[in-house]
Length: 419
Ligand code: EPZ
Image (tube, rainbow, N blue to C red; front, side, top):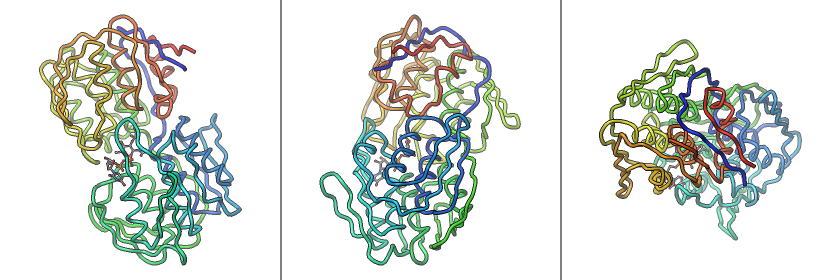
């Protein structure tokens, strides 16, 4: 099992290029099930989850090719795809459930493994299934699989999401593109990755428009076009490296970012005393030694992203005073806290609230990664801890961060991957 060894104490300074967004790439890939035309997707992050999605689509017969060197994926589905997505592939990448909507819309049947829970929560898909039922699908759960069918194709409907869900919005949005008639979706998630998915879907000929703040109208179509699409940058990766630089009092140039879609994160970091200068398509990050404590609540976009909660908590351990974190999205997203405590952090947890006592000196330790974002928060802690940190189970990290040790080592970090 691979591990990372991190020797702390170095400033993170230099240049980092942000990769394409994993969470935009995955739904875009799933939506290619709809089309028999040639599609080229560029600026794709070479991370495990994307490779798993490529493997899943290949397993159902998609004519898909991942060019790792050029970070491009070409797809040209000429024949009918199989409608079965196995547990083997979905157990490591929950976003595989995003093939359910397009398979059902295109072929009228689908058998997709229930994704199951993960470290951060039970992660049900009841909302996905309720919406598909509203569109006329017959849904059964058997032996851990969703078995879905619809005789004469999905029908457009009016559906209000009972709670804001990124995945459910994506799954139903894609399905509605091939449903008969008009679909109106209300209380949709607005994440930039969903906006990028909509840009892609419109480029291949889907009829989608925003009719209100969280309201979408989709008119079903049955033929699509070829296109080339460049995936949006990864705002969570960008936020992670901003924090890495601020933590270590470095001076970092971060390229390929657009702060317009990161207002909540940038405002909070600036409030803490992180200096972020916004240039045309890069930013310069530096920070005062004395960072201020802040309070933050995770919220659906445009609120502060839950995917940056573990990372900002590490910065809070260095700031002056007591900071508070409220995790509103997932029921168990403080898995990093017990590991940070073992490094000397002083963090109190009460339900979905955390109290982070600042000005703490962190010491290196042997740690266990539990989920993607908790893992990266432990890398950040290792960068600023005295002596050595060993991080186990870094396959979690490899799911969503492209070349993290190279990007950080090139900026002064002492990180090496132990076989
Ligand atoms: C997406 O997960 C992201 N994953 C997550 O990023 C991200 O944390 C999350 O959105 C919130 O922003 C991808 O895009 C691949 P949700 P998703 O549906 O779609 C509950 C990362 O680190 N819910 O918005 O699964 C759910 O349990 C990952 O890159 C239901 O109850 O998140 C959660 O509490 C982690 N029933 C809340 O809604 C449902 O049918 C929000 O989940 C669906 C969701």
